[in-house]
Length: 93
Image 1: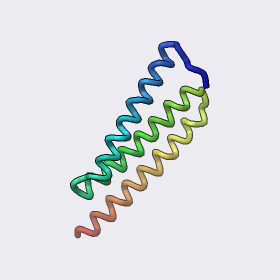
Image 2: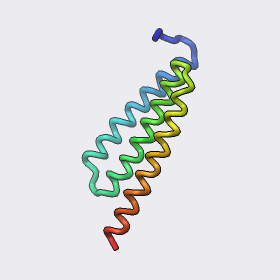
Image 3: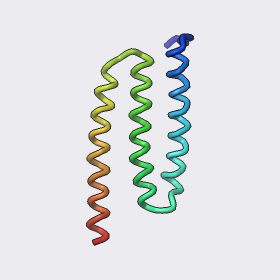
């Protein structure tokens, strides 16, 4: 992959850098979260950040397959979040 010096190329590299920073901060919250609910929210946010990274990478290499992969990851993440929320709700009842 060559360095893209156009404005859209630079914007994609900046977006990738911000997503990596967000991932580091979210991983910190996941490991040091004060409560279980904060850790679940961090896991959900982490999946959204990963989806963003996949989308930015797909735009950088100009491959539309990565958009389909991100949709599948989003669906699995949503189902997982609903399952964990249901488990916590039944555990607290």
